Structures are given as C-alpha cells and as structure tokens.
Length: 253
Image 1 (cartoon, one colour):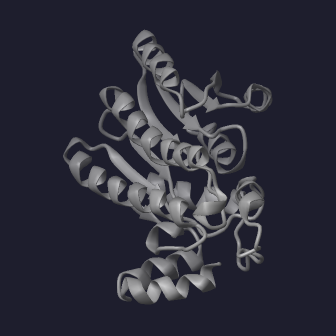
Image 2 (tube, one colour):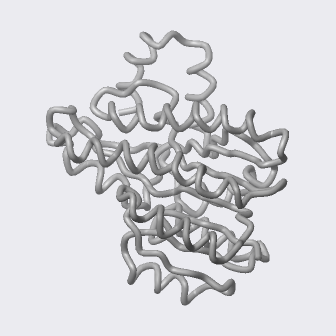
C-alpha cells in the first residue's frame, strides 16, 4: 500500500497539496492537523481513501500514534508533505516564550521527527517535502524566530537530500514568498502591534504556489522557489553579505 502523509492539511497550502495528491493514484492519503471538522470536510471531497489524524505535532504522543499506525499498516510512504507551521510578527519581546518554543517545535522539531518516523517506510522514488519560506534566505528583524526556523529547515533539507540521494529518496524544500489567501498572515500579524508588516505586494495564491511547487517536487528539485520574489531573494542571498541583507530585510517587511 502506497500512501501520502500531509500535515497542516486542514487549510492553506497543506489542503492544496492534498487536492493535488488526490490525482497521484495513491492507496491512501493521511490527513494530519489539529482541527477534525476541517479534515472531515476535506476527506469528503477526495477520490482517494483517506485517514484523519487530528493531532498536535508539538506533542510527543502524536508521533507515537503515527508510528503505531505506520507499523500496523505496513505502508510505503510515497509522499511526506510537512505543511504545518506558523509564525509571529513583531519584536521577540512582544511574543511569549511559550509561543516561540511552540513555533520552533512545530516548524523544526516536528519536521525532523516526521522524517525519522517515515524513513523506514520509504523506498526509491519517495518524496520528502518540507514547506519552508523565502524568509530562510535572510535574517528578518520582527520576524526573527520564524526566519531562523526556516533557515534551519532549508539547511537540514539540503543536507538530507544529499544523504538520501544514493537511496533514490527525493527531498524538496519549498520556499515561497507571501501567500495572501492562507491563514498565515492573519495569525502571524496578531503580535505585530507596531504594524512593521503592513503590505504584501506581489503575494501569491495558495493554488498557484502549490501547483507550481508540486510540479517541481515531482521533477526532483531540491530547493524550490515557486514565484519571482522568492527566486530573486534566493539569488541575492548567495551573492550579498548578510549585513547588507539585514538592512535589505526592511524591504521584505
């Protein structure tokens, strides 16, 4: 049995990837997010058989549940898409330590734990996909911890891709610019009391970003920048010193 596992499947880019995976001829799609009603609604629209796991990936018990489910099913994981994640805007002093730690747990620790969990169930041709951000390419004051979590995810994924290449397991990290029709901006801006982030020019849509990036995933691309702004930032970050990028991050804001 070949399956896909998608985290953050209840909304945003995660939900869009589920729709695309529905046409991949999989035996099952496992939908993971905290909100059961949204998962049930999504499952009702799919052609592919699905399993619903209303789990919080900042809690260790969630991984034990998934580990047992994988052991019981003896499934081959053809796709892992880790789309769960969140950010907070504003100075770090405006965000509680608990929230910052949860951000690190979900954006990074969960990503690593999921890979460790599914690797024994992967084979040549399996895809491990991490939803990142072009924030990974530069330091961003007032988005400091989020950008740092994505920098970790970018470097981790690139190293993992090199490690697993000999086994034929493909690793991709998707680094889009702002996506305007997801819950991310609304959630992240709740702590931006001074409105450091007011405008989101050239922001993409979740349908376009998901479709473009999934095409690149299937081609085996490692670092995927599915829009013009993220591609430009990726290029500039390879040539411009970090001190200048730090000043230029005002433009990102």
